[in-house]
Image (cartoon, rainbow, N blue to C red; front, side, top):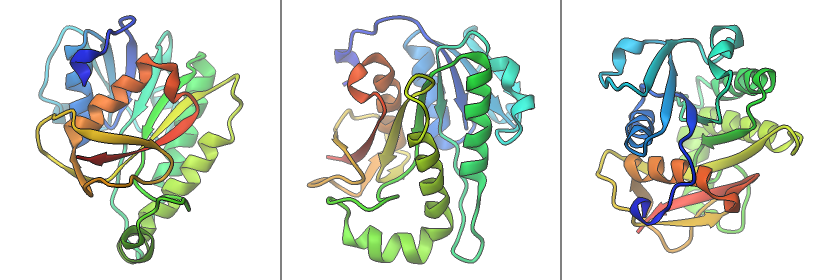
Length: 224
């Protein structure tokens, strides 16, 4: 899929979560496409890759002052931030970090955002019963609830100030990029597997920056 796209321009990207499993794929593929990447990470030493177009910045995604200056002059922000939280130990990391990221973007006039969440964060006609009734409420509610809060925060933004795409993938694996996945607007996919590779998610997160088709919408991804 990536090879079929004619990229419009070289972008200056800021990636949050670049030291994570999906974030590392985003960073690598963005550099392969010729983009300039600034990765905001708490522990830069966790990123082994070295590239002339890669800048590593030590920062806390929840503390805007720690990274705001690095957003100046950038074209887009990609967030692959993620933490695990259980029903007994819920998190507010997603909403707190996005509040800070949106503030940093506003200060620096950066309007394009691509953010990764998950299947079925909100009600939808295509939601799978397994996610709605078992996986999310019993195992992931401490995480999904805050993802929902984050999504609603993004969706309520002024269209003149923010152009977002919310990417909701199914379960993730460490497999290779295949380009074989289904994209559907909404909360969940129909007729797909419940797994796909992080490499394919990274590909799509970069693809959305090259097309107005995905502006201010949310899309579910499922493997084929």
